[in-house]
Length: 197
Image (cartoon, rainbow, N blue to C red):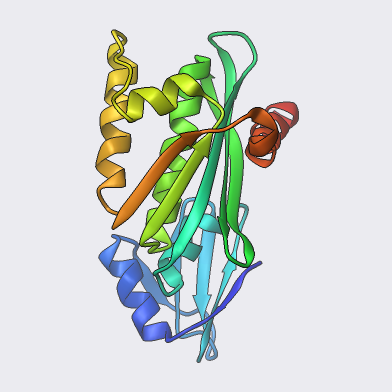
C-alpha cells in the first residue's frame, strides 16, 4: 500500500486532469477519495494512501513527475494464440518504481508483447517521467516500433501506431532489444499471472 507524501490539492488536480473522478472523503480526516481500475487513493493532510490490487493505476498520477527510468516489458502466451498475460517493470535510480502483471485473455504472443509494452509505457507516462529507456526481449516488437521491420498484420500495425503515439509524450526515449535474462522480472510477472489464472 504506497503512501505518497505530496501537496494533496495538486495531486487532486492531476487526477482530475487525467479524467479520474474525485469524491469527498468518507471520514473527517479524509480530504478526498478517487478510484481508477483496481486502485483507490485516499488523501489526508499531506499524503495520499493508495489501496487496491493495482496501485499503479493511480500512483503515477499522484506522484510529482519528472526524471528518467528504464521500462522493461514482456508478454507471455500459453499456445499461440492462447491464454496470455503481460508483465512490466519501471526502474528508476532508487530501484523499482512500479511493476505489474496480469492476464489479458486470449492473444498471440506478439499481441501480448505489444500489450505489455503499451501498459509499461502508459504507466511511465502517468508517473510524469521525462525520459524512458524501454527494454524488451522481443526483437520483432522492438524492430517494428523503431521502424526497422514492417508488418502485414493489421492488429500489430495498430499496436505499433499506439506505441509510437505514447512515446511522443516523452522528451526523449529509446527502445532496445535485450536478452531474456536481462528482462527476467517482467517475464516472471507475466508468467506468474498465467500460473495464477
